[in-house]
Image (cartoon, rainbow, N blue to C red; front, side, top):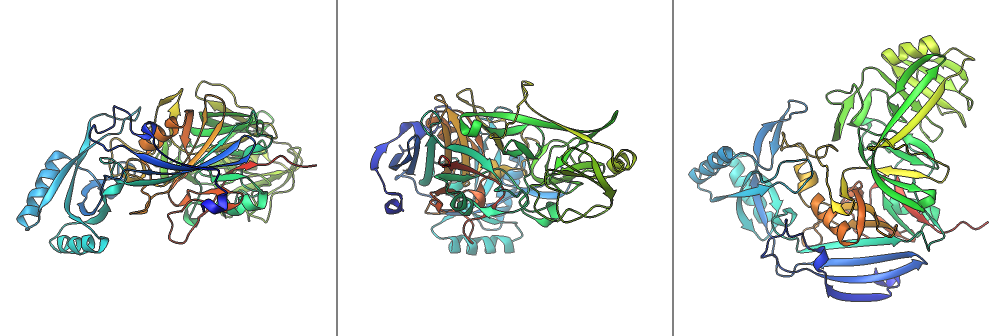
Length: 525
């Protein structure tokens, strides 16, 4: 890979800034060393590839015995990595009575800005095994004794440093770079493409995957975003609650990270109706976060909520067959004039036009107000948490995910507010947020430079990834004064000149995603 990148420099140095802060670090933790290779792709665009190592750390396989519980959101039975002291003591004694030698480990809350501090709970584990097969054999014996088990790699735990983390960092300086940085669906919000394939098509210098998106037909149309997205100055999807977003203004000349909300309203004469979604299936809200949604109108990561009364707008960028089902559909031309009203469905949105689909009371509103030849005006408003309105022009784009990592130069992770953990339900979000995973991160430093970063994960003996808190520490160590977590896991990808340079965690290789962030060379007339 280094030969392919045309490495300009290779350094082997100790990087204290990449270690945890004093409040989080174990004083006995070994120092990290990082070997970096650096490549300049264009004036103002640099990519650094590094391997962070803790050579004195050794990780093993182990058998975990989870704690039973009930989902606070759905009421369904769940299992949690951690439980109460009483549960841990009782479970450990039962394991000893069955002839096993368990250990009880205390797990502390990460230093999120909106969750409790101190001990989160306790977990019960059995054994240290050099191979996964040995751990699986032990797990089978424990399961046969009446316990639920799973096999875990200790390198994903935050209690000890990872032995290895492979990272890629791109830094783009808009004061020098004469190209652009933008979020894009590549013309179709209803498709999935790999980050590297979009990069190759657009001839980009650097690309990373973007925000969360629908991955299953049961949750909507695959590839559509489950959160706020905009490209070429146009909203392609709406926010689900107030969540972190990367705003790339003026083609990446002005960059900031902020929690954003969206309000979209349809107006027919003096009658108004609130639009709850853009380019999604009416009634299905991935990641929840819309008023009236059940079981929650708050953001909940990877949960699909439902709306009985739902008005959804479709734009020409929705390049798929329109959803069918009960309800009403109104087709509008570029001026907002109603062309037709009828059943939901059809092939495409008219060029320059829009389509409104309503179910429940929204269908009743369309029936009463969307007469052929009449006009419906659509008003779209994006605001940050200070109430400041975000105006979109043709070269502005927005990519959103969750949560915020760095704010005003400090680690500030609002994990509960953005719906990625639940302090009252430890079965929700524990592995997603508090265990090491592949991550994609974005931010801006004090000089206004865009930082795009990835860490590989879920690779035992290879690269173990970051927790959310470690992701925030890493971005701050790079100088970020604002940063957010983008989609991660199997979606994490970075491409350089159209070629994938990281190692995705999916067994099938690079995952096709919804939107991406692309760093594009200047267009030539």
